[in-house]
Length: 114
Image 1 (cartoon, rainbow, N blue to C red):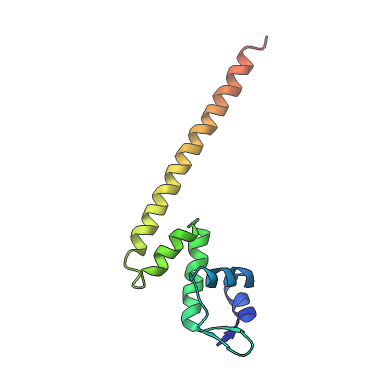
Image 2 (cartoon, one colour):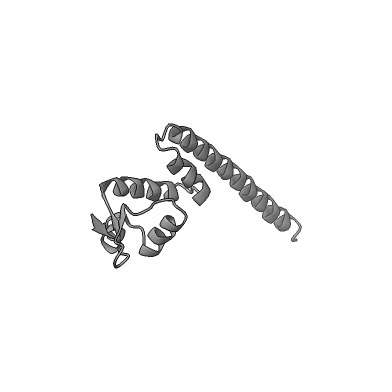
């Protein structure tokens, strides 16, 4: 079992993030000492925390992460990752169109200058 500060160092999640994740029931401590209210995390919590770090890096929202965590079998994780990948690709296309529009706008302004 690891105290929250140790667990934060291990996972790269801040103590504040871990507290927030516990509050929204995304990642709850394995044990909370009833006397001093210290939070303790176990090895199973570590696996879930690492998964949450990756999902956060992939741009998942809290709601999307909750959907993954609520599916305890992780049966739909691959589908969610594929959908997230598609959404990112769509965003890239949209941004590329904006870049091209800006380039066109800049080029049209230069054509008007004598």
